[in-house]
Length: 272
Ligand code: ZN
Image (cartoon, rainbow, N blue to C red):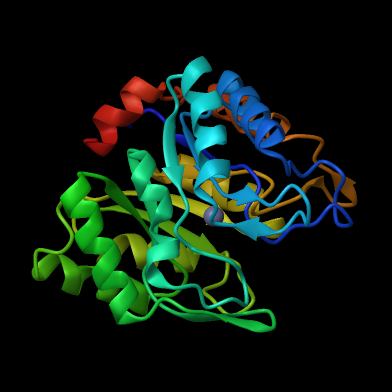
């Protein structure tokens, strides 16, 4: 089995300080939390930024730059910057593509639209076309975020058209209220329909995080943990940091006998 690549979703754009006091908000907090998670064993840091005044998600280049510069100066972590925009706000495509200007090795590619709480998470064709084209031009690998099975077929069409380049890297997002559930059956189906040379990782949302991590670990896939997807360490007990969530999966993986990939090893596995 390949070594295990651990990605950490540091803060996302939705979780508030009212939900957990441990969610990083300022660029300094986001960078520090990412650096701690990298020290704990994460090789990929998935980054959103927040407006320090309002605490809400934003696409401001200066904020991304501050986080990216701080992390790059202290780590060799792979950066995966978000292009998902802000919940409930239909941002112009150009604004969603802003993080590509910082030349991360990965950017998120949400391969279709889906209902999310009160809002529709909009990823129409024009956006996906523009994002695919921009990643090809800049040599950035898209991390294909899959919330339901149709999104895999969207990616396969883009692959056929040459708008995505093989090998593909999928991030299955299981357990959102309107997406595929965080179950073994979901994961089996998804892993059976992707091209053979693809790599994949799984996000179990909320209570699905730890079980999906265990399943992917034994199947030979990769995993994402972190406060963006799950704020609890166990039932009723908030996770105190991203590093705490990373440390747990590192311990389990060691016990299980699967080694953890360093960022350099993750680059080789993902063919970055
Ligand atoms: Zn994200």
